[in-house]
Amino acid sequence: MRILLIGLLGISVLAVAAAFFIFRQESGGGMLGREIDHYWEVGEFDLTDQHGERYSSEALKGKVWLANFMFTSCPAECPVLTRQLDLVRMKLGPRRDVAYVSFSVDPQNDTPERLKAFSEAYGPDPNWSLLTGEMEVMTEVVRSQFLQPLTREVSGDDPETNNIYHSNLILVIDGEGSVRYYCDGLDQRAANSLSRVVEVLLKEARS
Image (tube, rainbow, N blue to C red):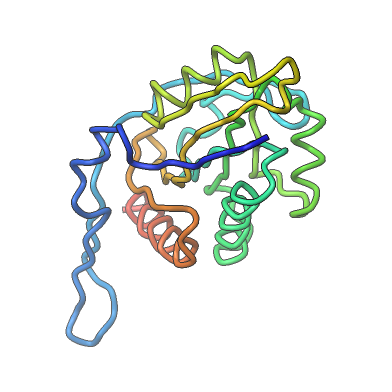
């Protein structure tokens, strides 16, 4: 399966963001008074996780969570995006108020069993959910709720040969379901910036 990952292209709401967040540094060189914008509300969804169980957005209320888009047969980029989530998990450590959600852009092939097998390489984590569902539902979630590009081109009778064009962004969503930050998941600095934003939002939620 050939793939091409795209981020901001054609997504006008993302293009207006000149900066993802603003850090005001105190004189001592530390971080103080961090401000993070609100972009848009993701809305509700009801899908199936890697254990074959129902998973809805209700499970994420009150948590800061990260979202990415992937599929299990992706040979290169998707493992990199997943690795970034894994790095954030290691940086933040186990927390009940932080969750990680990976949305399959190839639900036709990504059964719960395949998603579970894919996740096993990164170790078990009750706070990481890999989600799939009906093709139309997954497409609606990615395009209309996360405002991310997603295109599938049928190139033959075998669905494994289809081309999938999707986003390489990783997003951070707050406990109210509002997108607060996003970055290129292929950037080697992504895990650091994502971790810092999560920490800021956790402090915001406690204040």
